[in-house]
Structure formats: structure tokens, C-alpha cells
Amino acid sequence: MTKTRLYSGMQPSAESLQIGNYIGALLPWKSLQQTHDAFFSIVDLHAITVAQDPTALRENTRRTAAQYIAAGIDPAASTLYVQSHVAAHAQLAWVLNTITGYGEASRMTQFKDKSARHGADATTVGLFAYPTLMAADILLYQTSLVPVGEDQRQHVELTRDLAARFNARFGDTFTIPEVAIQKETAKIYDLQNPLSKMSKSAESHAGVIWLLEDSAVTRKKIMRAVTDTDGGVVFDRENKPGVANLLTIYSVLAERSVQSLEDEYAGRGYGDLKKGLAEVVTSTFDPIRARVQELLDDPAELDRLLAVNAAHAAEVANETLATVYDRVGFLQPR
Ligand code: TRP
Image 1 (cartoon, protein in one colour):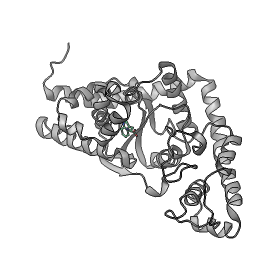
Image 2 (image 1 turned 45 degrees about the vertical axis):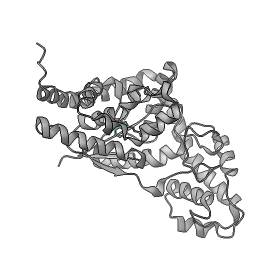
Image 3 (image 1 turned 90 degrees about the vertical axis):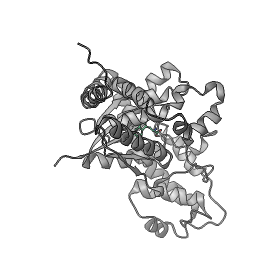
Image 4 (image 1 turned 90 degrees about the horizontal axis):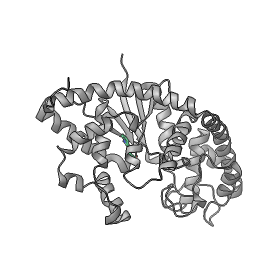
């Protein structure tokens, strides 16, 4: 039986992933790759919809790839590649732009948020077209399943609309993808501000755990995490968001139930809980960090891996693109 095709992407916009990416994306992708025909792209075309430093972008693209591989995305089992290595993404995105309504694109809430945040001068046509490029990513591969966070749901819905519209107008061409929303239970919050999502763009990094930071720094951040004055190690998201967040991270990384952690730490106070958590986090990330370093020490080998996977991706993508070009009536070049 052939495996179901799955597609997801991540931006190469930071030097290091943070623990929220690890728990929210990497761990689920790692298990999905065993049961699905998985494509994961490092979306550098998307990254430049807001200004990037060229040197940093190139470096972060390699670092992102290295972290995904080190954390368990197997480049022999999954197709892990760099989006700009496959020209068909930009080519299909253009065609999709021509069947997307201006009003339809204007309703994308992420665009509204980002354009408000960056201001009129930094809001580019590229940022506006971000969702149609994402639709091209997904549709090129005849994807059935798209695992993403809740914030990307609207983009996948637009993708479904565009696929159905193209199919109706030009004949059956694209698979209509389903969205798979990552579990809310795996949502990780800022250690200093446990009511807001842990984010690489947080104002202060005191509440953000980076995969590649020194383990002594991670330990310190965990020991200083905001809790409450109640003192009980109990999972109560509403009244004890800090402790609930620590328990969530602990539970996912140690693969233990929250209940068993509550039992273990009953009557022992937050210091012990934090020490235990710091141990689990650093023993998870230490080996990954070492592997990342190995991969980055041999950039030629890393680039070769990415090239092999991009060649495979291009093969699949170009077949879809050729059908699209034919259906819309482009003259074939001779
Ligand atoms: N926009 C996605 C994000 O920011 C990343 C992404 C780009 C993506 N292309 C994709 C996710 C295709 C799923 C499928 O998280």
C-alpha cells in the first residue's frame, strides 16, 4: 500500500529552534514520517517576505536543516529540502495568484496582523502573496495531509479553495488536502509570561528555551520560571499557568503522564519540580546539540543531503507543474 502524502514547512528565520518548535512540530513530524510519505521544506522563499539579512538567512537555513535532522527527521525516510531549490514553487505560486481574489487574500488574518505590525512601508506584495505560495507548496506534491499549528489553518483552507477552483475551471489537477491541527495540549508558553505562547520573537529571551543554547543557560531559565505562591504541583491551566506549562514540557519530553508527575512531586515544592525538568530538558537537548555541531562542521555533506532531497522533490513538483502549465494553455517550449 502506498503511504499518504504529507507536507509541512518551517521558516529558517532563527539561529536556533526553541522548545515550542521541538514539541509542537518536530516531535509530531518525527512520528508522522514513519507512517506517511513526508515532505518537509525549509521555506526560505517565505522567509524573505519580511526583510532578512542575506548572510544570516543562508546560515540559518543550514542550521534549521541540521536541527531537524539531529532531532530525528530522517533525510533518507522523509524529503527534507530547501524550498528555493525547487523552482516550481515560485512558478505555481504565480499561477495561483491569478485565480486568487484580492478580497480573499485581504481576509487572511496573518497578513492583517503582520502588515499592521510591520507598517505600510514594510508590507510588500510578497507578504500579501505569502498564502498563495504556501498553497503552491502543498498542491505541487498532491498532498493529502498538512500538519500545522492553529495559526496556519486559514492558509490551508485557502489552499483547499484554490485547489477546488482550479480543478473546476481547468479539470481535475490537484488533490484537495486535509489540515491536521497540532494538539492544543502540546502548546508551550513563555517561562516568564505563561499566558503567552513561547515565541522566538518574544521581547525578552528569559522565558524562551533554545535548542542550541548552553545547558547551563537552559537550567537557569527553568529555575527562574514564573510559577505562583500556592506551592502545589498540580496541573491547573487557568489558575496555575506557570506550573501547568512546566508540567506539560516535562510530561512530553519524559513521555510520562501529568498525573504521574503530580504524584511524584506532591508536597515537594517547585524547586524540585524545576530541577527534575531541567534534567529532562538538558538530557534531551545535549545529544541533539552535539549532532547539530557535527552536521554543521561538514557543510558540504549537509548541502549534498539537501541537494539529493531537492532533486527528489523537484521530480514530483515538476510533474504537477507541467500539468498545470498545460491546462492553463501555455505553449510548450521546444
Ligand atoms: N507558513 C507556515 C508557518 O509559518 C510554514 C509553511 C510554508 C508551511 N509552507 C507550508 C506549512 C506548507 C505547511 C505547508 O508555519
